[in-house]
Amino acid sequence: MKRLVVLFFLFLLAASERQTLSGKMFTFPVESNRHHVSLTPELNNSNFTALTVCLRAFSDLFQNQSLFSLAFPSQENAFVIFKPKQGTYRLHVGAPYVEFLGLPDDPNVWNSVCATWEGKTGVAQLWVNGNPSTRKGFSRGGSLSGAPSITLGQERSKAGFVASRSFVGMLTDVHMWDSVLPLEQLAYYTYGLQFQPGNVLNWNSLEFSKIGYVLLECTKTTQKLRIN
Image 1 (cartoon, rainbow, N blue to C red):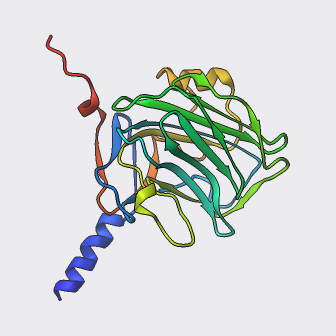
Image 2 (tube, rainbow, N blue to C red):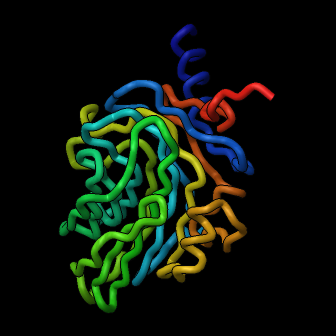
Image 3 (cartoon, rainbow, N blue to C red):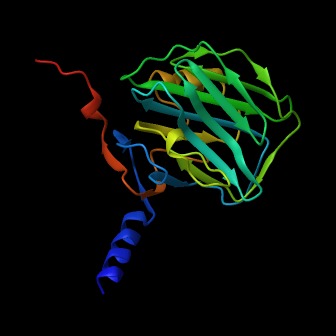
């Protein structure tokens, strides 16, 4: 009986829900091979020929960090934003990936990250806090299709999640579009102005499941203390 109660409790913790998450963040307090957030996209079956993903991350890690992972049944690393070390970001589109070096980001502050990829040309680019990366090309002429599975805080693989590649910190303002977002809209997102919300993932109306030790908290706890 006790086991059934525990299983029911875990089911409730993982149950999917839709919320407006403005002013909120997911907190990943510990390194693990389990704790993560699963996001439900607006498009159940897709054929992506271009993508933009934007998010804000707050962490003090200088090691591997899995920020965003989009997978399909036939493609584990369909679109992954991974940070192997400070100032370096790795973008996967399918099996291939490219690294963007020398990007300015600091620990213990919010860093705005936007990644774009256009299948027709294969050109990918990152912006960190409004600073552009070099434009690099890969997976030219490719597309990503199937039923998408989106994960925050972990990177999917055949062996399952790996603790040493998990994210520890906070994530907020996650949006995803099935196009390359215009520069103007990227700037509006980066600097907190009014922008067109994601049509695949929209932080202002997001369906998600928290699995394991993940908290949904107010972003005010990361503001610098001031005395009025």
